Length: 172
Ligand code: ZN
View 1 (cartoon, protein in one colour):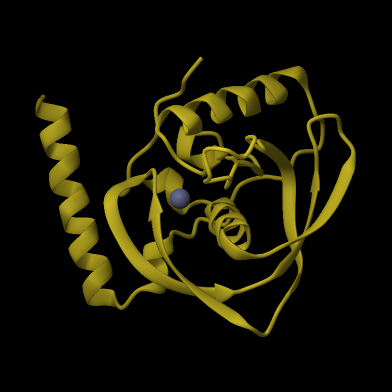
View 2: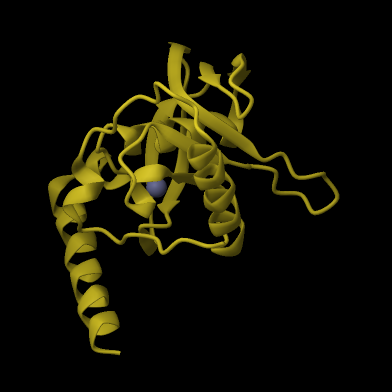
């Protein structure tokens, strides 16, 4: 089942999400639904606050090539435990801010720790698009959007476009 994705601006996207203390079947179902929602959008990452749930859960799959098998990742309580000094700039977008893109600079490599769908702790070094994506999604759990990295003027411009889009959608 798919879930509707919340669009910026929305107070739920500015909140800090709560850690998972009990990995219930409901949370596993939510994670599976988030993956279907993400693939359907289509997108490469989705955080629980984007579907209105303020829980520290993200899903991602940054495999881009058609000839590569998909790699869906479900992360409960994801944490960046180390980040490289080397930086990388990617043009980022967000399913909560459709059709708006901007360059964001972040650490090029990160060490990530999380709890997987089976409740096991995982740890992995990520680079390239994976590193950018996982940092973008974890930011969502702290109420932070990629446009928060932009200069105020650019951020306001995007927010005004989004307000207009939401008004149009509400009328449709
Ligand atoms: Zn996003």
